[in-house]
Image (cartoon, rainbow, N blue to C red; front, side, top):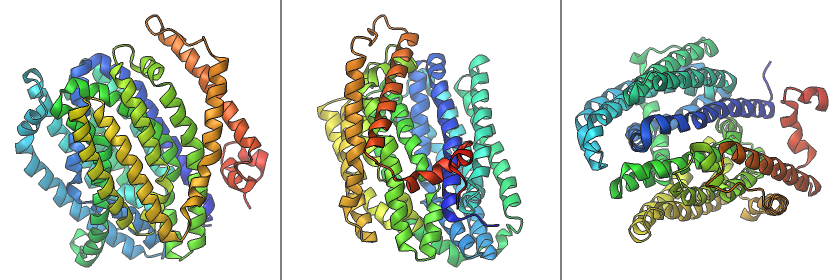
Length: 518
């Protein structure tokens, strides 16, 4: 029996939240050990190489972004042969791209290392690590098609069960590398093994979910490739813009300064990224659902999906961003210890910029599901251009913190421009979206001020504060702030019953308390 789309969306969102939360939590737990084990300079190199290998990932020209949409559209039409054709095109394309990536980039690895002022003592190690990162990228590309099949079929329960297991194996592997002193080389070998295992498991799961799947790459259809490539090329501009907005600042700092300052900047980015990623989990199942609604020409349901999804997103992200900005210093001290004071100001700037960007997340994923990547392409050009120009100017004039300030300004302008384009597309006044911020903003400010007054004088002094004292203070502040925030929104009647009921019913105890969905 088929599951109603609304219930499927809620189920998939919860599974995505579980899978991604576990991966983020493991990463946050591992970073302090990596910093302590590798040292600041090697950790900065590790962070910089991750960014550089990510730029090499752009070699697919955005093609991969089309898979989930095309698989979901075939599912809505019950077109099994069309789905097979999509998979065949992807397998052939990524096989060729992976070979080209390795052949073209490997000879240039030493030049990349020199570009970022890598010290001679780390040069050989860095060259191996970047080469291994290219192998990881090639493996991930080859198997990405099968993950897209599962997501397009809305089998997020399967993909996230796999993600939970793989993230745990990866974390144990990294812990083993630290324990047995295997260095950066050991960490990258672990990445290669985990990527290969993940791909093989996804391949098996895709065949189980779609028994009629047949590869047969010799039946590659060029016309479908051109159609998917046209869609992906527009998305590629947005991908490049996202990488410039969220990663180029580390590249610029490595170029103008050194890898040690990259490490300080990376610490702030990791906290900001986690802050951004948790609320965005709510949007992770929207693309296939929006694609299905768009295929059915149900514009009213798309508008409702946008407003309700944005409401959830703003409800979660507003207090989270306010808390991180206000408590940047104790959060960093608690996480990685003393010596990272330079990261505090960066975190405050980036938390604001990432918040202004993530609140457009629901609209962005719906536009993708509707087959309108041109909206992201246009806003991406604006955001990327502003980010690059402002960051260069501000780094030269302001210094280290100029990169973060440039990111905030470009993310704010870019996000507002995208929301203007999207609301014009769906024929909805932008004011309907902006009104959603009123109560969460007011409740966050009132709750933070009230809890700050209550806890005044309890903040541990930094020179003497241990992690235990900081954890108690932040925990008490977070609990008090969260409860007061929820209480204020409850009295403001921010949510209606029908907006929360489907989500509550999916919780382990939800059906017993709230009944079954009709």
